[in-house]
Image (cartoon, rainbow, N blue to C red; front, side, top):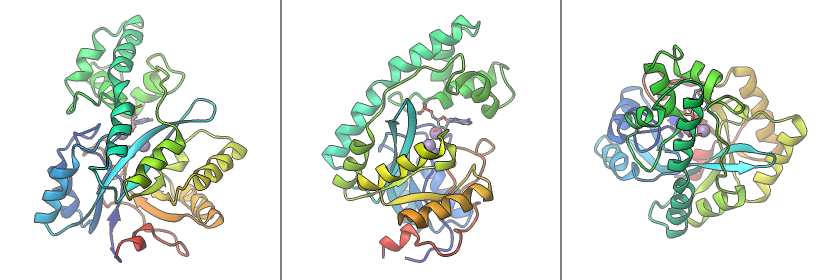
Length: 280
Ligand code: AMP
Ligand code: MN
Ligand code: MN
Ligand code: MN
């Protein structure tokens, strides 16, 4: 497969995106994407709709997922699974377990915010939720913007929802090995999402790459929506060093909200093996 404009990571209302799965596909087509993977957080329920829409538009489509992982000293890492069988019982059951803690976490986020004078944030966040099994910090962020607490989603995270901020509630997600095992059991390939986003010291960062490789991870997002070109060059270096396959992705969540729109991302740097070479 030699797509000209692949986009292998994005979100719909099945998790914290703002467009329905079919609307994501239509927007991808309109933006010239020619290979798409929908990768909702810890959730597969948007895939059937997206796949059907992709098929009616003759868009090449991969079933995907983005799994939340707790790693090392209290870090949250995201692992994308591509080309998965969305009916695989191990994956389905694993994800159900990862999702299970989200509602009580969300209630606690609401309680924390109320201690800082922001009332009823849990109920407010729910207004933005498309899938009750998947309440995310993004939904809180949208509600806090509505309340006028901050001008946009990005600043809400910086002030209220990022690690160490007043509305942050620590949570235990899947283990790295589990997430990769579920993806592999479902016939997919595991890709480390947006590596530049993790606040890791250099030694720790290399431990993550080595461990990801050792447990069966095969790819790394070299180009990711929110990332500047110098970060992409650094990750390209890592990609070669560890023998990962390179992915390219917008991590699109919604018009006006994401850093990059569907397909509107840089090409892969030279000299990398693209992950889409796996699908012919
Ligand atoms: P959760 O899985 O509920 O912890 O929510 C994580 C989601 O919050 C991510 O997938 C992003 O969509 C969003 N997010 C996290 N950090 C930021 C940030 N600094 N700016 C904007 N969105 C963010
Ligand atoms: Mn998200
Ligand atoms: Mn992510
Ligand atoms: Mn994502």
